[in-house]
Length: 507
Image 1 (tube, rainbow, N blue to C red):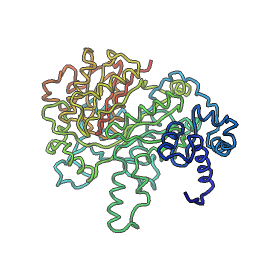
Image 2: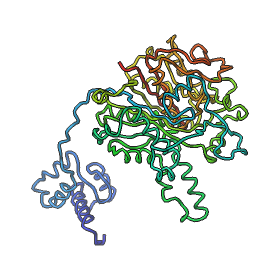
Image 3: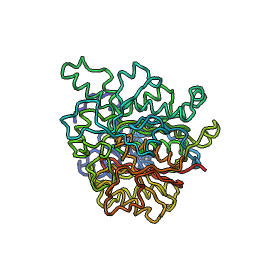
């Protein structure tokens, strides 16, 4: 083979291979035999073959017979070996307890956790005709649309003009959660900011910003908003909020469709449990109420078309349900390590016990017909939390008002907890609509508020329940007293993503 000029690294690798070939059987043997020998005693391909195992040790030790031939290869083999270092294992972290010390919401039913929950308890519906754009040609013209919202005092005006609404909802809800948790600017300045993180996700991201960029591109790329790419990505809300706060701990987003918030909450809690953070802002945010968002879900044939009576449109477990109702907003929790919360004198609203994720691995939009993924998720969540199934007496269900989804979840819940005569189950979506990636965030707030207040909110529009549904398990049309022992909140997303998280009164 003709010699080829090679850069220094390639020359080293070629030299190494030459000596290795000699070790494996000599360069003058047939190629097939050489390949077999190489497979037996060498690792790697091309010119970066490196010795390992007993043969490597014999090669490096060398015999007098091979010493001369091996020296150049030995030098290379040694050069390619990473420096051996003693890796110190992290000290075992005892199970650090995680508590909720703050809540923030932006919803069709109010932008304060108490106002929001009182409206739920009163059975107020946040679903109405869409006013933001002309949807007269759409078969669905209703949603859980936020009619009034202000970023004053929460987001800098310049940023507020440029950002997508999902980011505005996220940042506002995040800062409101901090305020609700007593984490004033003065107190935040005393925190170790390397141990504070933000994990607030989004299913849809900056749809409006991206859609506007496409429209601008029809004229010219010069007309495009220079922020259209970063402000469209799902991670940028968490990133901007962290920049504002100076928080340098774990910071990213998770996007698992309608299960997004629960995934974020459990991962945030795990950062605290593992000793990687002391405070985490977590939850979800979405603002999909624009023509392309509405049109996309209409095309999926997922939405209710009960336009003549918007407040009756979302009706989980009712025979007359005809699809879910879109919503928008954000739900954010402040999770904190227990001792950290105690040291600053924080008010503790509930304790986070644990949770789990599974995948149906079955269909993009339909649940598994036997509910396997949901049941597995609930069982794993119980195991992660160290909770017996008999201890669960309240479930905030995913229940979106779809034909198959409502029933498969109900069957799974009854299979797991049906022996508990005190079990109460409700769906927040009957009043808010489906906030997509933010749904789990506001529903976590609802579960925590149920723990705090001793009241669970009604199931709106459950007028003609499915025959397989036991109305003794479902909350009725009025709020009910319930001393919550352990609450479970489910969220499931397109793609078969299942998530369950558990909360309990702090003791």
